[in-house]
Image 1 (cartoon, one colour):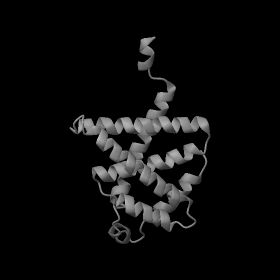
Image 2 (cartoon, one colour; image 1 turned 135 degrees about the horizontal axis):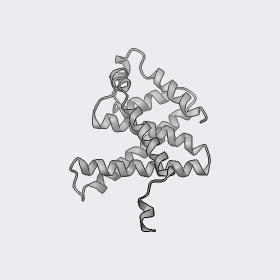
Image 3 (cartoon, rainbow, N blue to C red; image 1 turned 45 degrees about the vertical axis):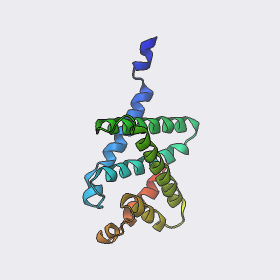
Length: 163
């Protein structure tokens, strides 16, 4: 009975698969080479957060069972952040403070992205991406020639498409 907690079941594998797909998608070279996302710890985290927000928004619309899956996915994300902080050498006393900062950043970005996705024009999403992924830097938007209009349009379509 005690070993039951240590066994992997299909539900845990599904969450691991979802999270693995989010991380893999966030690490695609096109974001860093083609779109100019900074290949830094912050840039990588911002892309993971963006993909998490998009998936959680879709799961939220699918009903209670999917929302539960989304909550478990978010919990897995938080455990992964905690483990990564500890692996990078952040002390035990500093980890909760850093996790609180991550939570504030996540919820702020989630609010901005969801508001931008529901806005009638795509410029709001472009602005939210520039503000959060590039910390307000518009040089990336103008430097790309086409800015974030194409990815913003793709994100809007992805978020509205049913599973």
